[in-house]
Length: 83
Image 1 (cartoon, helix red, strand yellow):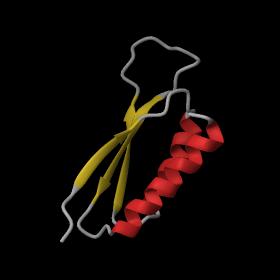
Image 2 (image 1 turned 60 degrees about the vertical axis):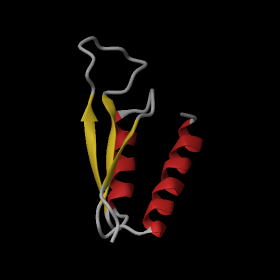
Image 3 (image 1 turned 90 degrees about the vertical axis):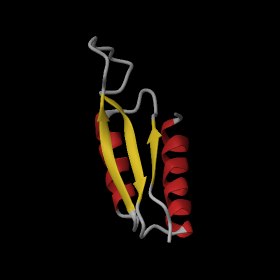
């Protein structure tokens, strides 16, 4: 039995659309739940994301392969968008 764990992921300067795409990809991994974190800043900054980050939660049904897949997806986005 795997324990639930929750992890916060933040990528500076990643657009709302890309965060939504990333969340959609991560939600396809078995045993993974993803929530978008709203931006907490009260001032608009064009160079900052409209999203504060992602919460990734691994549920009881997640496996080591699920965690590895999440890491692969995150690495892809880091490399593609240079974040």
